[in-house]
Length: 471
Image (cartoon, rainbow, N blue to C red):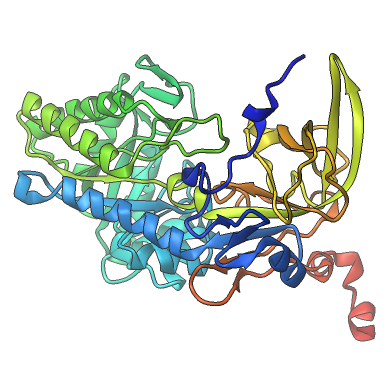
């Protein structure tokens, strides 16, 4: 097995700025984030540590909000455009403040996410609720929020239409709803398959007529207001033809509805826009180019079907938060392991799959940079692994690192903003790392790190009346 180690070397921020937060710098001696060295961040705040560049996040959110408003400006004969932050990628009160102040709405998918968004000050008129199995409690909050309820409840089944109608009627409200449609278009990575992709838990089938039936049922309820159609076609998408095809199929349904007197006011084309994870990845598509391509595709399809162009929205999450976060680890055990054709350096860090499950779950690829110093030592093929009792606990499967790395060194893994914290766990009773904000003043906690006491507080056997009294 042979590897070109130079191709496995993590690029510095100046070499691939798309991989790192805006404030990331390498001065030839060490990495800094928000003008604070990686060494100082770990010494002051501990590790593992998620470091979020707040200015980067706010800037990326503002770019998305701006390009959607510009490309779908009604002065161009369009119906307006907006961007909703897919909060499942990473959510906290401060994150919501940053993306909403930048002009984005918020897309939620649970009671917790919806509650947090509203408590953090998100305008209910710019909040959506997704989910294939929404509870009555979630729907009640969505319908009762603000003066009109949230902007849209994206219904996922025929049965949900009836449940939302009932709850809205009970609350004396008219709920605004959209339909999640499975269009038969699926995209991800470098693949584009414009064939049926119906075998999934989300959405109502376009091909079978279920989506049309749901729209008819919504139109028949006085307690429901039909807002439009939604589709999500995949993740890490680089081929915009897939979005154009999905938009065309959604608008073919909008045409059927228009012929029956039901107007589609909004078209939500979802998210899934690719970002950079390693130096081998191509440059990501610019939001401006994405919005312009979508605008052209929607305009063309509306002309084809003789429809007025609706309001168009998108739901970027990963592409907003992903590059804004870097995870810092302390290195522990380092050992050389013989493999076919050579050897591999196994570098253990003080976190792992509990703070980033994606490599184990999806075989996701990341890279890693020695952050606290530079080295002239020859490069070695390395694998960065976590400290969990699991052979699949891999942080970075293949990376080139200096051969003199040792215990106590700091390792930086970029592009961990999407789903690192959101999918973190307490496997092996490890505490989850905190998220530190930089780039807007002094470093400060956005999400506090867990302590062992936080874990034990939920253990009934450790919290009997006797133990509580002793404490």
